[in-house]
Length: 129
Image (tube, rainbow, N blue to C red; front, side, top):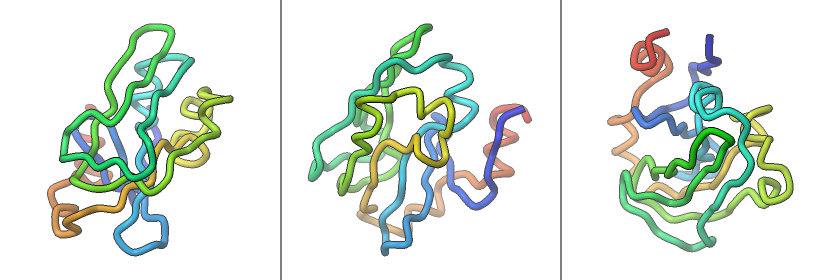
C-alpha cells in the first residue's frame, strides 16, 4: 500500500505538488507509488533554474534499475530551484519521496489550474488503492 498524503495534489502521471509556504511555489516530485513501481532510482536529470514548462511537458528524466521515465510538469510554470541533493543521492526519491526526495520547486503560472489536479482520495482511486 502506497503512502498518499491527503494535503498534496497529484497528477494521473504520478507527480505530486506540495506547498512550500511561498506564494504559488510548490515542491514537485514523484509519488510513493511511482517510486515503488520504478524500483531503485539510480539517476535523476533535472532542468536548469529559470526553465519554463507547459503542463505535461517533460521537465526531466528519472532512471531506475528497471526503466527510464520522463518527468512531467504538473502545470505551466517556472523552475525556481532544483534539488541538487539528488545528484549525489538519487535514492532519496525511494527513501523519502515527499520529503528530501523532491525534484524541483515550481512557480505555478496560473494558480487556478490547481483545481484540475487530483486530491489524495482521487489519486488513491486512480492507482487502485
